[in-house]
Length: 328
Image (cartoon, rainbow, N blue to C red; front, side, top):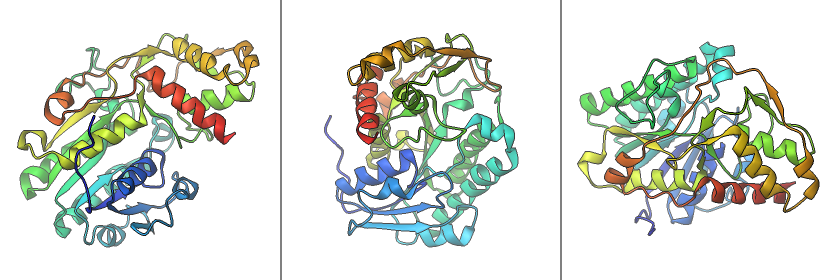
């Protein structure tokens, strides 16, 4: 699809050193915008910024969204905010709920206040599919959510509540994007809280056996990074009032079991190394706080934002595998 016009704007990307944030920074620079990146590099990485750190329209601020003065500094002269900074991971939040809350709720509120006071035009933020909690409805529709199943899910739902209040009380335009299992280039395969796709790819490339939590029948709506970039740009360019001050599912709109996911990964990786096909898969216990199945309805985003995801799971996996192999 044609990229909406977004040129010569100044855009703050919080968490810009992270997986999604760095991809957004790069895309916005490629569209000839000024990009300010705010990151404390606790989970983000400076190496994610190498490709464009010397770009004349790029400014990096190392700082923490838990500090209101840092937030106020970062939003000066900014037209739009893409708020990606957060402590992700359900298991991390279960292990340390206080820090997750401090960053994801306290830091979020700091960014809202700073954006309001600086006269930012629009505040687009990363929401989460974890907000659906114990809801068993399928596919997930924005207006039907259950009770959260983890501290992380609570923090992301509180973000939506705060954004709604700031829209109604202060007139700050907000849009929340409930991401569904985003994957792709620059996603870190290492660490205790690595996402499943990069972790499995890394293990398979080393000939190590991936461990699937449960029997592998759990399913997810995995979403390639370029679909997420498209959605964020659409949020910044829409001029339709009905599209504002609400939340959207951002996904491909399909789901796949973990067993089938591993089969695809093996298939695409064996194009580089045939021995990967023989790597054994191990099954472990289910993970606390995990939901069994997740699939998004993307009708609302299609209707209001003209969202049109270009990458299916298989297309995205091929691109991701190629990227990881090239980095190895």
